[in-house]
Image (cartoon, rainbow, N blue to C red; front, side):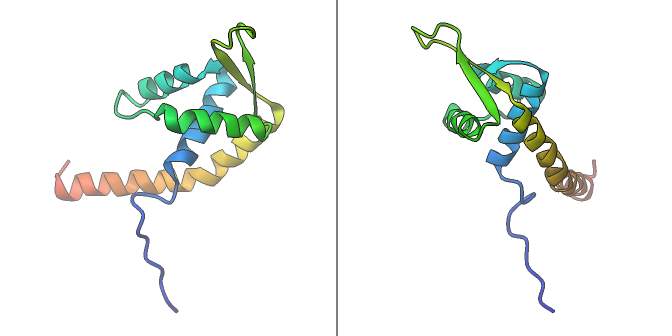
Length: 122
């Protein structure tokens, strides 16, 4: 029986997968536009991290293309601000992501807490 080493730290959950789940989470609370999603994630993560526009905007296009979110322009003639809302299909996908990603997030927390306790004696 061979064991497979885990080389990715601290979890198998990619940054893009985290941003996707967090974006859908925010959209369960209301409508948001891209920069507001970035700002809201940054605030909720206590200013320790934020997704880049280069990550978020392609993700929003993908989510919209997949039918998980719908976007509309505040001023369609100017294409100034595009606000997004979650669809029923997106909400179902979000519920699946919650179940799928919880173990990876729990493992990440255990790893970080263990390092802080062992190395830093916190």
